[in-house]
Amino acid sequence: MILPVQRQNLPEYKNIKFSGANLSLYDKGCCVVALTNLCNFFGKKIDPIKLSELLEFTNEGNVIWNSLTKIYPTIKFVWRYDWSNTDARLDIINDLLKQRNPLIVSTMTGKNRRIEHFLNLWEEKNGDYVCSCPLKGGINFKEVYGDPTRWIYKVILYEYEEKDLLDRIKVSLEQALNFWENLGISLKDIDSKVGALT
Image (cartoon, rainbow, N blue to C red):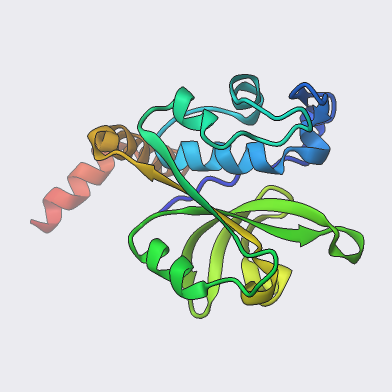
């Protein structure tokens, strides 16, 4: 599976502002970027700049979660868990991931870990979580942020309606073809090799 890994800390995002709070995508855009990764995972081709123009925000610049569903009605905002004052329920997280529900979670980063940071959780693997981090790219959660029971604070769940599944399959096929083309292998070459084996 090719997982989307958009980054917020790119030079081209330094002067991109979003929300009425005029926040910088480069410094404060982790939530927008995590939502961008989610949209691309579900087959919606969009970049963080465009998505930041379409999302709704509070006066402080926080994303209004259900505004994503207004943009893409087939990506349904379901709920948000907040475990800021207790240990994260990894059993709930694992059950959701087993059902192929990618999650957006928050942790704490920065000096003395006082800055809330959002990232994507895609799957549980060998006691850790495969993630797309807007600051660090493709990572394993525990290796970078520590014990997920301690350092996962919030979990945001969206569900994807299956009637748009063909869009997602189409994007996956395009990504696979681009991969082979970058290696100099054409679809005709693949077809001839498969034919020779059958």
